[in-house]
Image (cartoon, rainbow, N blue to C red):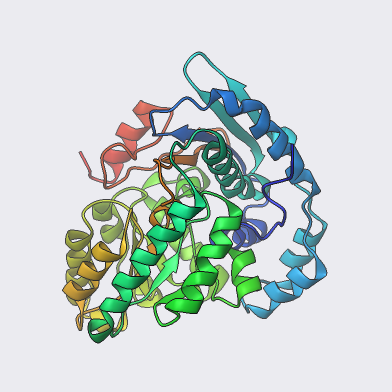
Length: 390
C-alpha cells in the first residue's frame, strides 16, 4: 500500500457523525449488518487485496484535539459523545472482504455505533482504487477541463441566479481525495456565491466551508427493528431525531419507505418541527409538488420550508428545479458524483446499506426502480402491506 486513502477520521460525510451521536445517546447496544452493493456492471474482484489493506489502515485513525475543538464549535456535537469519539478506534475485523464467483463482497457486522462510520470510508476507498486502475479515460486534465465548462455555465447565468446555491455531496463516489479538495478550492475561488457548503467534514474544516447533512437512510431503516410496532418505525425515527437535535438538523429524508408512506407519517407536530424534506429518488419536480401540496394541506406556508434535492443532479437539472419552485418554496441542491467524479470514463454506482438490525431484517423501499435493498423479500412485502403500498 503506497499510502492510506483515508487519513483523517473527519474525511467522511457530516451525517455520519450526526447519526453516530444519536446512536451513542439512544441505541448504544444495537447490532447491525451492512452490505456493499455495486450497481455498475464491472468486476471489482481484482481490487480485493487493496481494499482489505486500506480498510485495515482505518484502525490508525483517531480524532485529534484540533478536530475535536472544531466539531465542538459547530454547536451540533455534545461533550460526552466527542470524548467517546476521541478515545474510539475503528476495528477493521468487523469488515469481511471476500471474492465470490460473481463479485467483490464487502460485509460489515457489529455494533451500529461503530459500523455506521465504515460506510463512507469503504465507498471512497473502492471508488478511488477503481479510478486509479480501471476507470478508462480518466485524468485530472479532463477533470479540470470539465469543471471549467461547468463554472462558465454557472457564470453565464449570473443575471438569473438569485437564490440558487448548491452543496457538494460527492465524498462517497469521488475520483480521489486530492481531486475532491482541488475541486472545492476551485469552486470557492471562482463561484463562491453558488457553493453553500460540503458534506465532507474534513474539507469543510480545512477550507472554511459550511458542513452540511442530517440523517441517512440507515437511521430510518434501523428503527424498523427498534420499535415494537413496525407501522410506527418511521414516525419514531423522526421523533427521536428531533429529541436529539431540537430542530438544529431539521431536514427529513423521505424515501426510505416511499414518499407516499412518508407523507402519511409527516403530519401534526412532526411537520411543524422539521424545516423541510430531502429528495433522493423518483422524479424530483413531481416529488416537490407533492411536498408543497402537503404543506398547504397542513396550513403550513411552503415559503417557510426547504426542499433539498440530491438525486443524480447536474447544474442544468438543479437550475430547472430551482426555477420551477421559485417563490413557492425554498430549494437547495446536493450534487455529488457529477462534480467529484466527472473526470472521464464512467464512475461506479455503488452503495453500502443496512440489511438487518438486532437480528431482524430492515429494508429501504425507494421511489425509484432498482434502489430497493433487502435480503428478505418476504419482509419487503410485509413492510409494503403495513405502510399501504400494496
